[in-house]
Image (cartoon, rainbow, N blue to C red; front, side):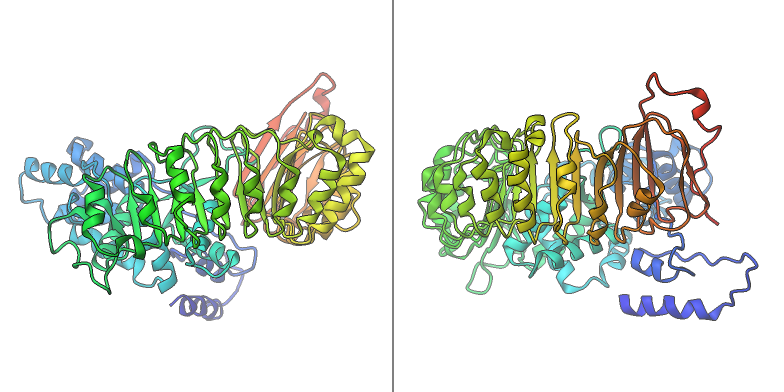
Length: 615
């Protein structure tokens, strides 16, 4: 289906003559890849539609349903519908078509009907407690999903494992997909994630404050409630994901009787289940067949010792999780468990028995009260990802170098993990983690200036041949020249973020990083040839640039280069920047952070700044 649309885009280019008379053909599609293929040139503009705001959503709903009328017809029920539609025109018009069929009814009747549909606050996981989608809405959603590949539909059905309104980060969701075996590799998982974003099925959660490209917290996404309900209805019929409501439902039509063929393997418990112990005892072989279990909210008394064949155990946000529950998990011989998350719980320590989880590959203890890791954690020889962000851990054991398969070491957020607290041998030993792919650390001002630490640091950087993301939080004003002097930087690096530290100029060796897509650095001068280094990075999409100097002449961004740049943030004393026509052709976000000082002269500021211009 997608291939056919892409082929259509290629054919369309040759049907109409290129006579330079200013004619344009506008093509609308849900897929960015299709839109890009239809452009007349590689740098053609693809306009990405944003969700409608509240005012436009109301206007679309009312005018489609009733024609040009006053806003007083917008009832409370319709207002609730608009919230669920989240500004998506396809869903708004589908509801409007449904209202059209009811125009002969009295306003009070259909207002009540719509309010009953949108006003329910029950979990979307409970099929029995929510009304059916109107036929027009179901048909509209069917149009979205009918051309989905099987693998994408499977990934979407997995989203029913999360509570309603769940907001997720890409990296966390990708790791869960991989732990569940839904994707074969991280690269494949990220491609599927990008396609779901491209189709507007995964929507961006609006930031609470001003959007900063260099903010520490990654962007979060969610699935639209109506889309999730549609997926859930498909899932329930196929007995794909079981919830607490489905397990306790007395209705025989809700779910087929448990049998050898239909046994719960993916179970999500997000609301209290009455007599959960009794439910599990009445279902033979229940615990032996479950492979994935997600528990959150106020659920209590889950017999974890009876579910010992788990591959994935996601306890994120479980308010009633206790230390005794973790002991139960570790002592239940869960030899198959590959993923364990206690993220955003009140856990204060991990039990020493955690070494019994010998197959564990992902351990997520982020956003907890844990202040120290037991030595037994470093005996988990298969561990690939260790997430310690926003915990009270201030120091790691040198034994971490035993985790030879570790690829992701995340210690950012509120954690102040500083190498200055460790001996030189520890800094040098970090290089032995040859599989390292993602690393976030904190370095003090003294460390960056200490030649002994620099000499221990550089060999480690050279050994990280697989490193894809490096974030270093430095002491304010730290010189990072030693990092730019490395003769052989990791060639697979995709993200380089240096905060508070500075370089004299753009490091020459950055041009070797052909896969770099995110770069944040601060420099003390920017000559034309140094700007060329940045502009020629072939895959650069986000650039956060700090200029620690008063420019004496304008910095000109030519039409060449920065072909893939989407976001550009620059912090400087005065904005003496000029963008030539055609510069940064794909730019979607431009931020200027001005910090004018006493040296800034009025005559050094240009009379105007030219933003990017497009035909």
